[in-house]
Every structure is written in structure tokens, then in C-alpha cells.
Image (cartoon, rainbow, N blue to C red; front, top):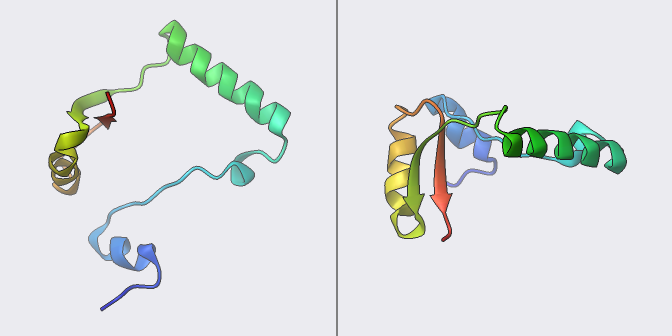
Length: 82
């Protein structure tokens, strides 16, 4: 049966679907850019850590998706383009 809304597919399985929408965060592009500069600077300087628990090359995207679906991940999975 086709679903009109992705939420109808993911909510019964307790999964989440998130996306970044700039309009929801900050309508002022100058303030948004300042915030992005701050966060990216913190990552670059090393005091804000993003816990990447596993990296997958593009050809293993299916394996990454299986790992995600298994719901045993605590941290970020990274799909590498290079």
C-alpha cells in the first residue's frame, strides 16, 4: 500500500526522520551564518566532538542502511563519498 507521508511509514516502527530547514531555525541569514560559523569552528578547533561510530564507503551504502535499521547505533554513521 503506498504511503502519502513518510511519517506514516516510520512512526509505527519508532524510527525518526529529520531534516534541516533553515526557516524553522532562524529566519535571519546573517544570524544563521554566524551560528554556522560558530559550530563549524568548534568542530574544526576540536572542542565540539561529533561521535562517528562507523564509516562506510559509497559502495557499502546498503550495509550502512542495514546497520541503521538494526537500531543498534549510538552515534553517527558516515557515508563517505571519497
